[in-house]
Length: 369
Ligand SMILES: [Zn+2]
Image (tube, rainbow, N blue to C red; front, side, top):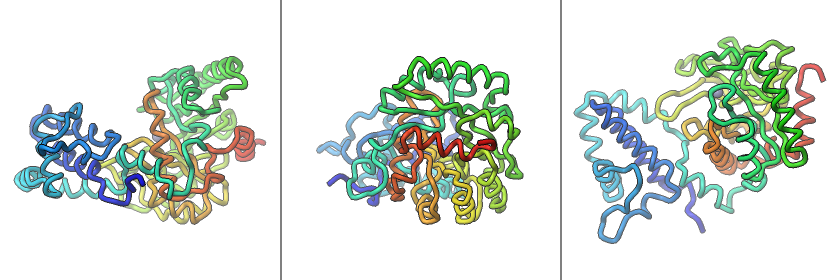
C-alpha cells in the first residue's frame, strides 16, 4: 500500500518552514539559498523521511546546504524547528509570516502528487486517461518552448492533442500576442498539423484575460478564430472583496471554453479571487464551460478541496499544466493528482475525451457554430 496523502506531508511542512526562514533573511543570498532549498524539498519524489540515515544524518540532497539540512533534521526529530521559530519571533515579522502560512492551504508536494497517482483507492482520472494538455505557452508569448517542442513533448508523453494558449494582446506584461501575430501562429499550426497528421493535433488556443468587470479582453469575432479559449483572471488577486459577479460573467461569456486558474492564487504569497464558488460553478455548468485545475506547482488552482464543490455542482473540468517550457509539461500530473483526490469523474474531464468529442464540444461553445 503506497503512502496516502492524508497523512502528514513532511516535505510540504519543511518546505514551508524554509520559505518562512527565507522571508525573514536580511541577506539576499541567504534568502535565495533557503528558497532554493524549499523548492528542492517540494520537488523531491520521495518523502523526506526516506533520506534519513541510520546514523541520524541526512542523505545528500541537491541544493540543500548545511543550515537547511539542520532545519530539516530538527523537524524530523522534533516535529518543528526551534531555529526557525526563534528567528521568526526575533525578526518582528510574525504577522507577515502568519499571513504567508495561511496562503499554503491544500498545496501538494511532488512526493504527494506521485503518491496520489499511485494510490489505487482513489477514484478519478489515471495518467493513462489523459490525452492532451489544454493550457500551454510558447515562444509566441512568454514561454520558452516552440510549437514543435510542444508537439514532440506531447507525443513523447503519449498525448494525441494539446492546445497552445499564449496570452492575449490585453496582457502586455506577459508579452500577449497581437491578432496579426496570432494569424501567423495559426498558419504555422496548420503547417505542423499537416506534418503530424494522424499522430497529433495542435489546437489553436488563447489565454484571454478576465477584466475587473468580468468581460474578456478580446472581441467576439476574435474569439471565434480560436478553437480553445481559456479565460483567466490576472488582476485584483489580492483583494478580499467579493468577486462572484466577475467570475459568473466570465464563465457565461459566449466563446469561452475554460475558466483558467480560477482563483489566481500563488503559493505563500497571494490568496487570489474571493467569490461564492458554488454560484460560479453552477453558472459554468449551465454554460458548459470547463473549470480548470491548473497544475503549476505554485498555483494548484483549483485545489482538490474546492474541486470537490465543482464535482458536486456537476462541472466539466480541464486539467492543464500551464507549462511555459517543455520541462513543465509534467505539471499536468499535479492537476491529475488533485482531480484524483477530488474524485472527478473521468467522463467530465475534457482532456480525457477523444479528440472528436473535444472538438465537437468546443465548436458548440463558439459564438458562430
Ligand atoms: Zn494565466
